[in-house]
Length: 420
Ligand code: KG4
Ligand code: ZN
Image (cartoon, rainbow, N blue to C red; front, side):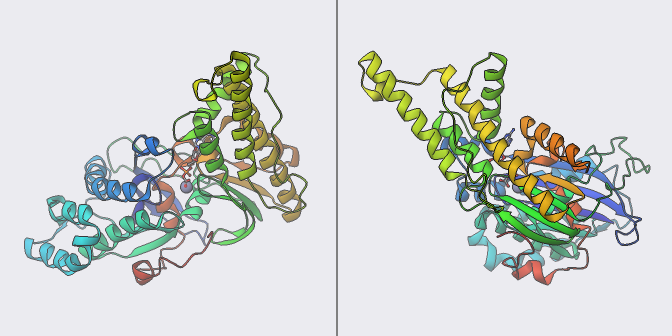
């Protein structure tokens, strides 16, 4: 079966096509990636220092249809040639008319794009649509869900609602994220997913989440630790903003931190390791961000005093920024590692999965590797492509839920299997 994945929970518009065969329950499941496209809006949002939801919603509405066109065009040769059905003009406009009242005012960009998308009349051999239903930004999630609803009705195929965080979990089980690129449907590129020793522990670290999740089996999750305030990626983004760096802040902090290490710059001060030793699996990152803010303010005061200038005229030096970025990254790493260690012991985890955008961080990846090695348990890390938000993970998660068909996705976007 071919599954179309749709992801619009934040500022990435993402679509993917995968093909599957076999069955998870029987241990015969295999999949291959046909194509996975991500259109990032990060640059657009960088002016706001974070994601601006209504702008993100409008962008998704504009991007989804052209991205789907590209996805289908790129995948043409790789898709099976069966079920070449075409919708007549009457069928196409009748279906769109049935959505018109609801969408023409609510999602005008998306609806207009769909109305003029002739290519949608050629029904591709897609068997199911998997769409992120949450958690995420409410307005942006709805664009994806509504797109899925319209496509599902036009092509008469089921829509499966997917929890975004489950997507991050299963993404790390892919052995390769490379689409099979011989350009033909010649049977190449099939892969099984990594065997996951259970119970497993998923550590989901992103711009919106910091969660420790106990996994008894894929599909059965228990959140055993989470953040009380800012998510870890949010802390990276906020700290970066205080240091005058652009959004998303994680890679920027990492870059400065690596330079500090290379240039032998030491941290100007020690930052707190929040909640270490709190005897639970809770996180809190807002204090760490405030500590960065105070460190920068104090340094500006010091420079102002030394140079006899007004504080508004002074800037902290690059050396100071690099040292502080390094110390920030270390404080985050120490905190995450300490909590992960406690969680491994508490759950007797036999494996660890790390997911979410922050898992792209090199220092963290190395520290996770070190820790799991010391317990002799495997670590599953996402690739660079699947660490951040993508639709490949949503399509893949869909393969575990192909029975949860349409009606839930249509209304029950409030239903959460995992996360807030
Ligand atoms: O999973 P994701 O793409 O989106 C959601 O939040 O769901 O994660 C984005 C977050 C941002 O906060 C970004 O700053 C962070 O991941 N991030 C990183 C790195 N790359 C991305 N944080 C630390 N180090 C990185 N290399
Ligand atoms: Zn995410």
